[in-house]
Length: 543
Image (cartoon, rainbow, N blue to C red; front, side, top):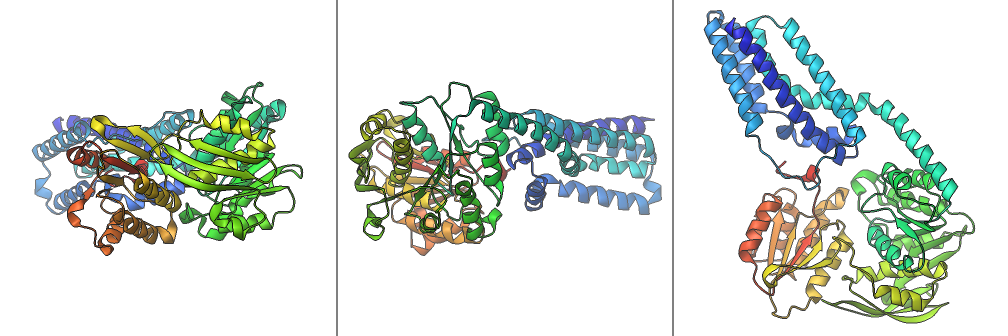
């Protein structure tokens, strides 16, 4: 009798722990865009975080022992065992490792539906266990009940897909109808990097003259953009700037069907998301879908400093084209309309001259950091000119231009420490540009230059070499390098060692909290700290 009561108490504690584990798994699934395939891949690379291997082995050993030693099957033995297992489950529930999420789980309607289905399957399993497992030696296996939470979440994510597709289809049709009704001028921006910064810059410039809406943050997927259209796009908005992201060919084409662009900007083609696209050629074709969607009276704007973009510009004859680039390529490409010259950078920002073959010349001064932002600014100027803004209006707009959040954003820190927040940058070109900013940065007290980084991800077969090269470049600039995550930053560490960088000036932290603690102990007034990239929680080694 006692063992039966304790058995059902054990079922309840296992059920509670299963709920907690479903919740944790749902967080990762949400970060991966609710894609079951990517979640399965994450599980395979994080087995020890998804399953309690020690628990499984322990129960297996107990089960074998009970099966081969019949005399051990007593009421006292099972009562004690169930009690110990229950206490252990309670301990794991109360004193489980709690990692502060950088981007917490958001209980959207979709997340609630998925959680509800997984919880239903878990509940059905609990009932079946309680009803049909009557033998004591079989009841031991209930301890593994919570281990089913992750597989059940995977099953749920596949089962619910048809329903989600129907719901998403309704939202997309409604968003398309709203676009057709309001008819804003749509500007599409895509590229392996630079698209978010270009979007922010363009929005701030155009907003000086027009009622302008942009997709916020990194809302660059169909459902993210759909949410903006249905919730934020109003009849008063004359221009809608849409950042278009992609993980495979066809993604941009789908976004263009949702928001048909009149102007398309291609900022760059590089190895970002190479892991998903599989080849640079696929990335180029995927990004070019934006240009293919433009109407014949539209406008395509290309960054021809990027070799692949230059090639795509040359093959574009279906729409008018504006090419832009910085001074290093002016003599090589006479087809450029917009160029930048005499670029200087300091801790106050950028200064350079813009030459437009049609509108003339102007001097741009901005608080933005990073010479790569000159390219993003040129793209924005090209659009603004096409929207009938004058060079003077554009120049005046830059006086009010705010730094792009988390992209080389200058933040005055405590005790005279300066922070450069580049935590939303995750590509090799941007990382190199960030180190250039650190190099050019003029500190009044000539303090140390410190880098804090977890490295770059989703670069496919180029990931190791790009991170190793980043380490080599960092060795030329930094007085202290703090690496976040031992496994993921190993290539950067190799690069630092290849450059004979002093080991005493390297610190490898297990997570960002540990990195910040070490940083606090080693910074002083006049120091400049660069936070380069900040990986989402699904890349957290300490998850």
